[in-house]
Length: 336
Image 1 (spheres, one colour):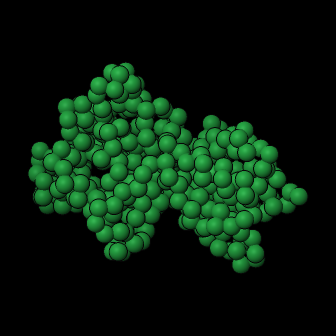
Image 2 (spheres, one colour):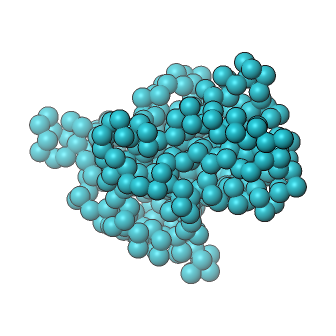
Image 3 (spheres, one colour):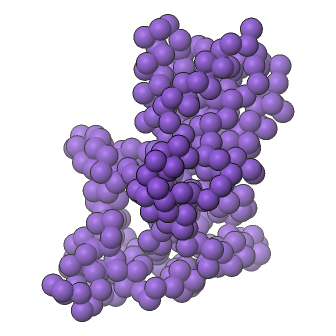
């Protein structure tokens, strides 16, 4: 297996799928580099360096720079998908989905249902999300709870380079619309990536750590924090199941419930604010379907219900941290 960064796994998967299937088209703001950028096309290859080289390989008909309009990007992807293409659209920041919610919520998420299964909309919408870069309230949000709540949309959140390849390949080949969310702080993360054709089915969580005492459910950037806490606690004889959801829609409810039935304790670590959040949804799932197994109330580690602050010191307090996660685990263990 090759070692590569998270962003390289995105790029190599796009290369592989565009070579495999000529219907795959990528589009987004500055993904070519902007005609007229100093150095010409490919000078940028996207601000996250996830489309470098695509234009030179596949040309202007399959690698398309768009206007600065998320509604146009997603609307074009919807039309391309209905016309038989397999578009991969990039939104530079997840925060900007607000201006394309009609296209996502009322259009691509409902096409298959409203047309009685006579058509599909195999569009992938990639977007960078998450805090930790001091990008302030409009460029740092985690909007996956909002998107997960929309029927007809699949929501995918890889936490490792290997999962990027497996899940993005699956997303591009899927006949339904997929929101593919990439945490900005993970783009430089290194990891092993399987060689050859590799897919990961949606709705199958990954067990990152195994233990008998507490179930920790998390996703995205938070996975690494939870693994570090589990490793620290393991040295004290405290065993934690750490479950990386990978996808929030569909969600692997069975993996969560099976783990809680063994441990009797649940901690959910979620970067988004707590109201109507993924954390509250999972806590509700467990308390309604595994209540008899619980030995303690579920612990929730989330951001506060506030906009994300710009100041570095405030942002660090805003985000879940290893200390907060460890404290939540110990609090659930204190119930006897």
